Image (cartoon, rainbow, N blue to C red):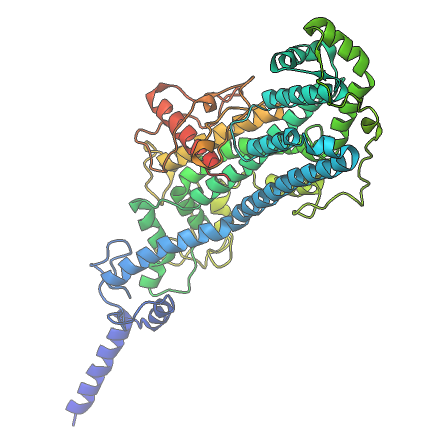
Length: 555
């Protein structure tokens, strides 16, 4: 009879021993299945963990296959979290690029329509028979804005020369003028100022406004492309291991509901996103340059203020020539010779009566509404607020991601995963950027090998920043033209001052990284010069290739 109690006691002791060393993995299986993984092979109770490669090799709820799946999941989680955190930034550049582009194109269309309607009413057939001059003007303005290789100053000079030839002939219809004589008339234009100061004033206003408008929209496009590209993180093997320990080793330890400690999360993400943080200095300079050009768009370079009264200003210039037609004609005849009288049958009646009609500008309620449904001032105020919020975005990513409640606990919490167990995390949080990761206790980062793709984005921002700074001063930087290939490019009206490596004509580029990235400070000198040396030259070329490719596709 004593044998039965003895056996029962032995079984109880064995069961208790099993419970002490082999806890249930039910919670882990539930959390694992919630991630979409099949439970086949997932342990019911803890097993020895010597097979694990990342997590602790003590008793575990993970098989090697589970650890590998969770490791892959951690990389997808980081990518998803990064895209989620950057979504507002990326959508801002995308939506505002579209908004500004629609606004500027609609403004051009409305301005052309306004001029056409008013000139038809005022000049009738005299305008319609010579309307190609004005059609060419707006066609070239649109071609410049959409990326064509148009020299604005030369184009505007040509417009006024052609207009002078046509109007001069209309005012002196009793004579006939050959091509040589018309060319001679154009030579006297600067001396005679037949249109008054209008050509000089309009040339300055139109050039500055269009350079600012086009460059600003290109800047929005470059910001959009850089943000989209940098939001796709390149996860190194060391980062992958650190992410697995951070996010899913609690599963293997039987603690699937335990969130990482806040500072532990920060150190891991600072290591994994070190190259993104190095984008910040150049990104901030780019944002500052965008804000400077935005100020110009609100003020002296306001393209809306230039284009809306364009028809009135051109008409007033024509009136100036008509008012001074006798003096202008006399000086032209003196310099170019007496023209031949018109042949019999041709009208010799002057057309002064036709030019007596004066234009009146649109009243505000008559002005057409743009497709953007707003004014330039409102668009600029909106984008400036959002651009200011975009500063220091990349270096703040680890903080922004780790402060989300579902990602980690507050820094002072002791009820969190500290990389090996439940408890407080004691190591200090490292600083931002690649070189600071030498002391990162969680991620082994090779600070001698910067991410070449990120370096290309840094240089792309640097080139665009130089272009924006030049536009702020009313100048443009020449980019290669692709109009012959049927797509818009970033071509400018020529480089006048402050030109940089962006002047070079680069072929269209792919996004393939270039070997031999340099470790130079990504922040440019005030003049925007790139670094020196063969590695830096390669990166300068890579950056210009990247920006050129972006600008070639921006339309």
